[in-house]
Amino acid sequence: MTPDGIELEAEAAWPGPPRPAGAGSDADSSGGAAAAVAVLSHPHPLYGGDMWNPLVDHLFRALPASGIATLRYNFRGTGRSGGSHDEGKAEQLDAAAAFDAAVRVAAERSSAAGAPPVVSVGWSFGGDVSLAAGHDRLSAWIGIAAPLRIVDPASMGAAADPRPKLLLVPEHDQFRSPADAAEITEGWANTELDVISGGDHFLMGHARVVGEKIAAFVSGLR
Image 1 (tube, helix red, strand yellow):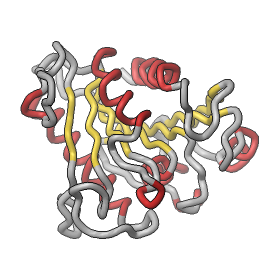
Image 2 (tube, rainbow, N blue to C red):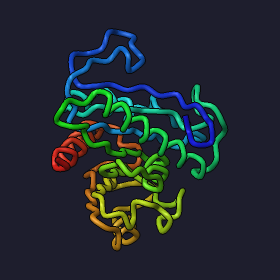
Image 3 (tube, rainbow, N blue to C red):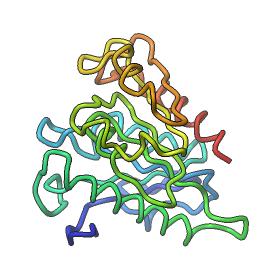
């Protein structure tokens, strides 16, 4: 539920044995220990983006195999989420609500050693929106092919925040080149930019590499 009362469609997956075929909710996922919880924010909903897009779906299923729990959700006006599209503005409330849900689930499932860190992982539109959103318990941001134009980069909360950030920029991104992304984010605090060799904005054929880079980054958070 968002701060402005919109109910969002979401599901989570936890490390451990595979879920039963057709399982679509956190209640059906296993209860192994998680090194982190990755909150996955999807591409632009007006251009076919939703939480089942191929890269989001790959990460949702592959990251738990690396010990990273995942939570994915649909922005308002998408799938079974309420509300309507707001061009990346009210969607920041959606991302914040997803972070809050992930923090809550992580705390409920944590052992005496403490809850795992929660990390934002946004692709394209979801990258811009999630870099602009925040939560006091969020440990890091990862932006995948973030266009850095849907939301003004100067207004993104992540820009000046001291918590770590990783920007994964496709070498041949049609919407924001690695050189442009590096220039825009040059003054950002604690930010690493990693180029996905050979990839374009849609990252077809590069999902495994993206997942490996996310897992490696997350492993350094604790």
